[in-house]
Image 1 (tube, rainbow, N blue to C red):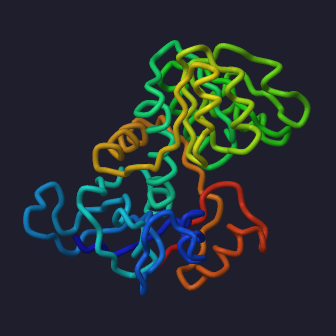
Image 2 (image 1 turned 30 degrees about the vertical axis):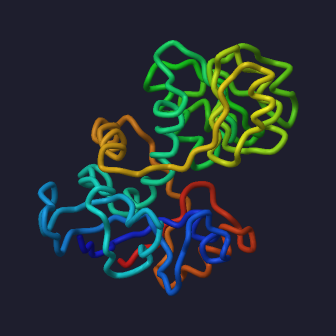
Length: 280
């Protein structure tokens, strides 16, 4: 399909691709950007879910490129109808980070109502959605965050928030059903100690130590997000029910893509929330 792009999300993976550090093969030349929201201007043969004029949002393709443009070629299987209750900027901020949070909790960790999950990086873009999804699903949430972010995590539904600047989380808790690791490093390593036997450590950051997994009798894995119409439908449903708070950190013009990347990398002040480029 061809989508007239109204807004495009900016994510760390865009910077990795630009720097030549993508985990996926990226033949040049290419256009950066994967998260998009806009309206359909053409559909290919066999596309039945969408028609010209539909407002859609999602991801361009499995290479995560082609989104920073006035028009993008996108796979229909990686798009969904944009919820009418949000604008294109909000919609473009959602796909990769929201689906990552959903899949970590439910597709990868297999969590069910009543179970306990520890979410690291709960104040980040992915973490904030993980907190909301977990709360909505009836999970008991334990979150790690800095002092400045505690109130915002509680407002999202976080049940227990540990200030990692003042306490060691692995001294505070035990026997959680799953850990969602959005931080990596020593935080990931120490997380093995808080899992119950048979628990799961799911990381969207790095591959966990499999020797530690065996030692603690848990499953530990790294995963890459797989954005699809079906996965986006979960997000769309929550948005339509006004059950999800969207967090756009900064909105810039398309011509300011360089500035957006400087924000990502800390060379300019980095906003909390997703950075979005807009054509409007």
